[in-house]
Image (tube, rainbow, N blue to C red):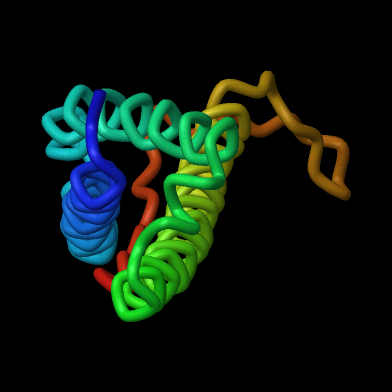
Length: 144
């Protein structure tokens, strides 16, 4: 059985590494390197599962946390606050990226749908042919 200080060290290490992963993930999102996100997912998933397990153990045995020195408990609490802030920031960044990608896909789909519509009628009653090709201007701001 692990000592309370060992459990605390594991929990803090998990939070620190997850924070690093989330910082890297936000950097990838900000630079629109979305394909590189896949590389992080396996490690992030494993770390999240380990973190959840450690938190469950902590909830089941709060006396282990209580047995720690005040200074160590304060360090853990500060680390948890930083981790929660980083997690919330990460969620906001992921939501923003999701919104941007959805809008881009929707705009491209709308442009393609307009291109594939059948003949249109002008005010004079004459039919016009849909354009055989259409240039769609797209501008990307590389920041979220």
